[in-house]
Image 1 (cartoon, one colour):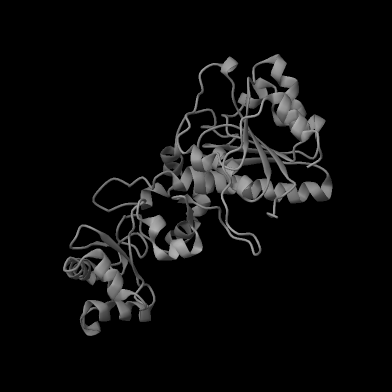
Image 2 (cartoon, rainbow, N blue to C red):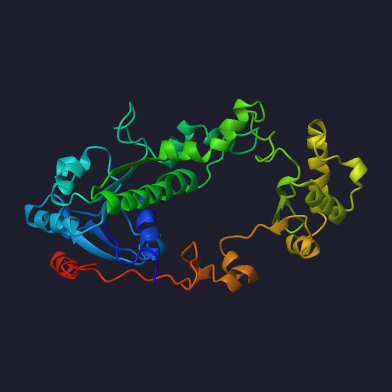
Length: 360
């Protein structure tokens, strides 16, 4: 049995963080119903890209949130739920009649999880945006990428999924624990600006102490250090080098046949020249040859695998990190083998109501 078995979550379908949060909660054993846009509501706003992963483990219930005919059914589902998660812009759920006040009036224990880019309040709360905009405001984006080029987008992992979905899940689970003790649910306001700022907390703290520069590409963890960055290899592949500790750095130098006396680790002024020397060295062999040479050492040198290659790596295969080529649920729990569930069949609103009429 998964840890969240018995919890019922009502997910108002969206794109990005709310969908990822719904997947996470379902992976952990919660019974999640995903309310999607019905044909009567017009063309779907969001496409199904990534649905094989992001929509797994839960059934879809097509509804028209503006329809009086569907309203009572949606309210009844919320009355039987432990939590609701949604990702609409501030005020939209209230205008539709599904805001926290309306839903918690019938279900005081209900936790109402909201994830947006800018948050429920603030000068930008009503403005549009995407992941890149939100992490740009938090200071995190500025720290990413080479120093001689604009900041590099870290996919949508920092805002949508890290600062948004993950912190929404943490907030909802924390509020559920409290609701079990108090009988009162909370409203969780997960803003991607707040979340991505929190993820960057270490670097804000280091900068405040004079240990981090706002210049990209000159710091310990942003590619400035020659022993913590990626290098191109002879075949066009790449290796990741993470030799931070002195003994790991010594193992790196040994593998590259470099005399430690010629390459002091923390001579920052010499980092550019040392990086150039490492670049030239790594270009003398193919990626997998370097991976083989450093295998079993403490040099912290590993291949940079493509999305296509990652599922077939022996470590990932041994841990079943991927199943049918797609990422398996994480984290792991003892006694529960990692197993991704396919998305459930679409349910009509009456079918969903009948299923939730039985206690969870």
